[in-house]
Image (tube, rainbow, N blue to C red; front, side):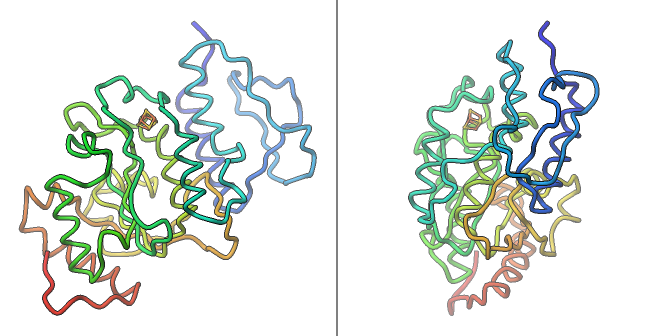
Length: 292
Ligand code: SF4
């Protein structure tokens, strides 16, 4: 068996790196090049950003496909991204899409996806919606939220006084989970850095997480919907750096996934309350005849 980091240790290290990034620390250097990343103790991380590029972290020799995926997930956050320094969000999103390529980073690539569903909408959107993953219609058309749930999302957007083209829509995972199952933790962890980069490029004022899976992945907290909804969170995309230093992150609100609202329309009133909170924040006025 090839050596591999214990999953708890790996998660602790990822959490630590994210914590540093929330503090605005992005560059890391290792003091001893010979300290093994595959040992039983976490590596010592020096958070002070010193101009010594020759001492930048080097990936250990990769010995198995499993180790490659694990190590890439962990260090994705440390590597300079192609879109960094690109001010035009259209060009920057194109670079992220190119970087994603014909992605095989997680197992969803071989579980029946027809295509990658990257995201759609206004690259300069003030409002961004994030769902959990593509369904059958989205997989077929290559665009998020195009089926019945997408129609309801369109109605929600319209009720806010906006058009679908005004906002940006994406998912935590970009490939359809088989049978529309919930994406698994490793799939979300592998795919979500691309979503974080999209958010950092678009720099929305508000992100609305549609459903518990999106909320938990964006906020990295585990709580029921009843606790997640009804307030704004300060949100900075983990592991992604915006080119705009004046962007202080987005406000994040949580509401029900449109697919859930189709199953339980009685909750539409609650979802409308969430959207009204967002409208107030964005100073949006609903059209004369509004309704979801
Ligand atoms: S879900 Fe994301 S990480 Fe997994 S294969 Fe698709 S694009 Fe790649």
